[in-house]
Image 1 (cartoon, rainbow, N blue to C red):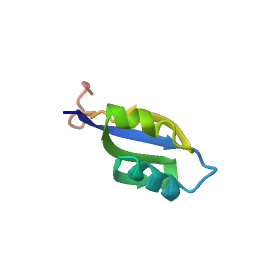
Image 2: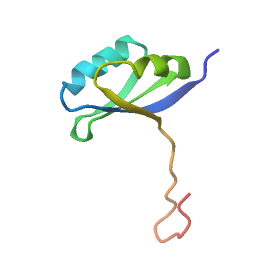
Image 3: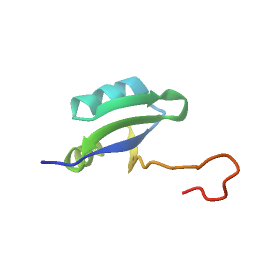
Length: 79
């Protein structure tokens, strides 16, 4: 069974981000958020699907969405 991971998809600004999100969804990305202001879409998919998503017109980059723990306020350790 394929391992589902979270991804951040950076898209070009020359197309509607919602149209790109629709194409990504049709190809297998489970959309979590469409962040129009910064040109990114977040979602989940397996690695095989991500390779297909990279070929969609308007997709600039796809990178893993990693969790970052900033720690409590005033703490010097951030990871």
